Length: 240
Image (tube, rainbow, N blue to C red; front, side, top):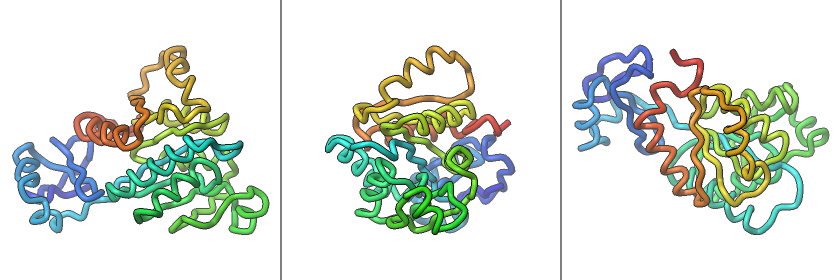
């Protein structure tokens, strides 16, 4: 349930809203297009009527292997782009490209969450050899690597794939099968080079949409546009 910030109508089901807006990193839902248009004219006037939830972006990518300067550049740019839009960031609290994304995110500032496979910080550090810096919060799931992937995906409004090996492929598969909006950073290597072929072979209509772009900031902008225009009505298979 949420409230239209303009007319204050209660919207029981988010997917039945007439429109949504993402403003200052938060999601706002509207009962009518007129309310949306009124909000657009002066969002600061109305935002206090309904405190929108922070939109969260999940970034999944290579946690191991040697990273090229170009991969690091793309990951840092992606992190900065997410933070500049005041979105929340979710990663697997692992090293590699997710950590580089967090580093870029931290340069700008914002709230980031790491979803750890470990059951404690001790296990996180010494069994999984994962970092505990850069995150504002780490959730210790005790679910192991594969169990953690489900939590990563289901806690994210968008999912962005950068580089990646078999673990990232698992996260992509969950996101695709559950109808998520997925972005792929082209030029980042790893499984991003074969995902288009995988989707064609799978040929399964799940409601998921996969957008690809070599510019992380532009990719995020395209995802925002697609989400607010269409995907919010069915952001996953669990919605209506």
